[in-house]
Amino acid sequence: MSDDPHVRTTVLIVDDHAPFRAAARRMLEADGFEVVGEAGDAASGLRLARDLSPDLVLLDVVLPDLSGFEVADRLADEPPAVVLVSSRDRADFGRRLRDSPALGFVSKDRLSGRRLRALQARSR
Image 1 (cartoon, rainbow, N blue to C red):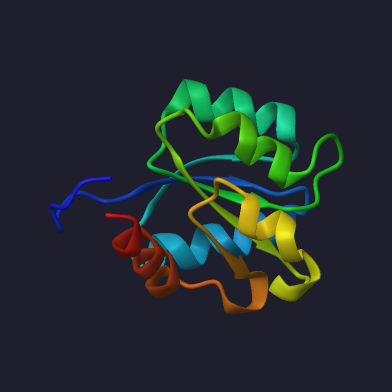
Image 2: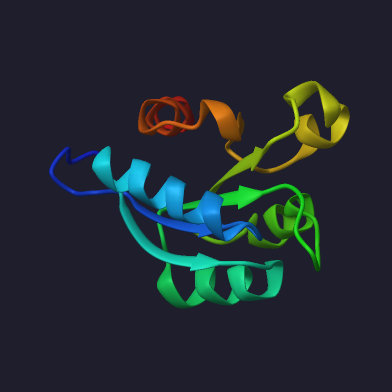
């Protein structure tokens, strides 16, 4: 991720709910992010993460084929930072969330460009 404010952060959205992907795309693009791709399952998300090399992967915890935690583990040695999202509360995931290599967690109802930027800033 670039420190240059004129370079837009690229994002891959991985979530099995198309309406959420569409809403997240609109919101992130309005907040200055560049959404480079979307995936509805873990296998597609992993492939696109490697093919597109986004700065950030917005990753649902619950996917039809693998959990978001498993995907985050597989991407741990790759360049994109991972932010986990869920409609469930952070407390529901307990230790699994604390042990994840993900940059952070944002509940879907609190997702914003500002929150993603704050997570990015903490990781630098």
